[in-house]
Amino acid sequence: MRLKPRDNRFYDLFTTAAGNTLDGAVLMEEFLSVPQADRERVADRIKEVEHAGDDTTHEIMQALNTSFITPFDREDIAHLAGQLDDVLDALDDAAELTVLYRVDELPEAVKKQASILKEAAALTVEVMPRLRTLKDLEEYWISINDLENQADTVYRSLLAELFNDGGDAVRIIKLKEVIDQLEAAADAFEHVADVVQTIALKES
Amino acid sequence: MRLKPRDNRFYDLFTTAAGNTLDGAVLMEEFLSVPQADRERVADRIKEVEHAGDDTTHEIMQALNTSFITPFDREDIAHLAGQLDDVLDALDDAAELTVLYRVDELPEAVKKQASILKEAAALTVEVMPRLRTLKDLEEYWISINDLENQADTVYRSLLAELFNDGGDAVRIIKLKEVIDQLEAAADAFEHVADVVQTIALKES
Amino acid sequence: MRLKPRDNRFYDLFTTAAGNTLDGAVLMEEFLSVPQADRERVADRIKEVEHAGDDTTHEIMQALNTSFITPFDREDIAHLAGQLDDVLDALDDAAELTVLYRVDELPEAVKKQASILKEAAALTVEVMPRLRTLKDLEEYWISINDLENQADTVYRSLLAELFNDGGDAVRIIKLKEVIDQLEAAADAFEHVADVVQTIALKES
Image 1 (tube, rainbow over the protein chains, first blue to last red):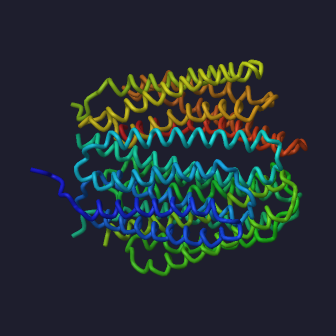
Image 2 (spheres, each protein chain N blue to C red; image 1 turned 180 degrees about the vertical axis):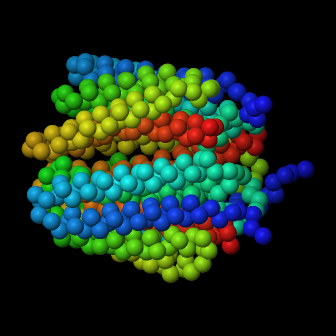
Image 3 (cartoon, each protein chain N blue to C red; image 1 turned 180 degrees about the horizontal axis):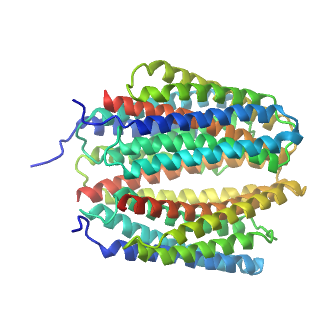
């Protein structure tokens, strides 16, 4: 006997939402490798993915607010949707600010930030269907935690490079905002893993 | 038959809270048009409105925590109060920082930010009593969404102007904090509209 | 007759969490008074306390997610744990950024920020066991509120000093991040007091 029905809608929507973050992370890698003149074009595609993400979030919240019974606690569903949405907001902001501020050369290590995000997104896509059974999640948590630690290290060394190399203050402010957004995306993936862990704990 | 009583206290308190944001937005327009020497005087009045807002928020939370039954979900009441409070915090911070940093000339477009905020506040005052019936909300959402898009465009062009005009770095940092706060106020009005939409969705 | 059992685990865990913030605040005072060369060593000890804080937060959340009945509303327990955790995150960030940015001299008034934090932490340690009875809380709220006002005044005057003394922009950015984190710790102590007040109001 199960008290909570397995409403497939939510699993499918979360898998779609995670897929959007992977699309965004792949485009972010492209964004960081094209010449400056092509950045706006890639930023527009990231914006499109961010809009698709908004639509998915909206569908999840609509499903949540109109469902009498949900497979997990309502607040956990809302948090999960919110954190996946935050990933794409951060990626979109990073790209948009880079274009808006007419940043020329980006520090090489931002590509490392993006590649970590792509790995985290791929793991998140993979784990979403497993919310059905809540089995075999251990490896996912360990990997996301490890990626978050890597992201932190890269971020700290980018800050040190930026602030201690005696560069121009305005350039420092611009670049800091961009790398802050990429770090915010990594944090959001970790928060996704925290919510998955909370859900698993409650069901155990 | 209604399961939830229509507790008028909440509607009245939310209308008061929205009225406070309109008072704040009107004062912000004044703040941005007076000579620098008069700013502190207007900032003090914004601070008073912010304190009035705190009192209203406190009354709402007190009513919430001591009511056995509420007209909407408790979390939605708390969010709505919190977002209306955030509007006034942001307006107060914008004024206080402008005075504290001894900012001289402000970019002309901050007045456009303030005028959008005044429009959003007026719409919010108007919609609060309609929480009783949750009817005719469509136009409110569309208008707030449209205003938020306008605010975003103004904000982005202010950032571009600020960062790409080769000005002094310290001045850029100061002005960015002020315009960030005005943008935060616009975001908070959009979040108010999101909560109203959530409430309407749950009741439909 | 009581409907809610007095689960001692939560009171003990919150007392431990508050104790961690006091350890952190005491170390922050030390951090701000040692020579620059010794800062990294003290920052490492703050990091250890922050990790201890993470463990306590994790224990609270685990107890929360596996308890069928809790002494307060679940959301209030989660908020309280989250705010105590935020104190240590902010202290850790302040120390880490000071080291990372190779800040030389810090403004004298940051020591005042730290001494206010230590007072707030001591009050918080003292109040946690009183969550059992929710009696004699008035003095705690008044004192925390008073300390938060003092912290705000110190913070504002630090900002004014920083921005209006015509210093180097990069140095301003670095120092602002450090004092922002100390101010965030003070805000988090106030949020702790807000949650305690919410809990008391619901039980009254």
